[in-house]
Image (cartoon, rainbow, N blue to C red; front, side):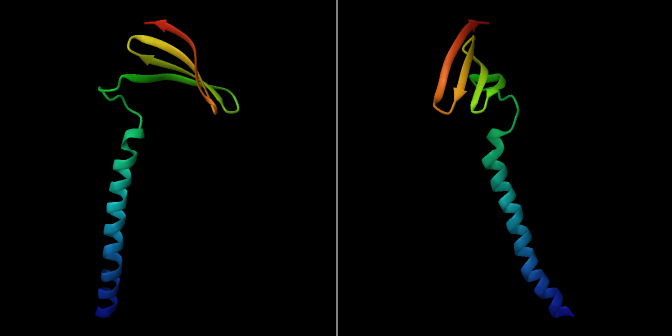
Length: 84
């Protein structure tokens, strides 16, 4: 009975600790991709819209300007720009 408890403790304790460390590592890796409004960002994406398969329109604020860009598989194209 006691050996069963010790065996479970020896196997499960490192497993649980490894899962906790793995979760912390993944949290730190994906923390920058989470939504929020960090104060030190110079570029903000205001809105995106799918136009067709593989083509997306995006409104971006950068240095007091609002830019409308098309994002496709072959690159990013500036469509229009306006001041704020």
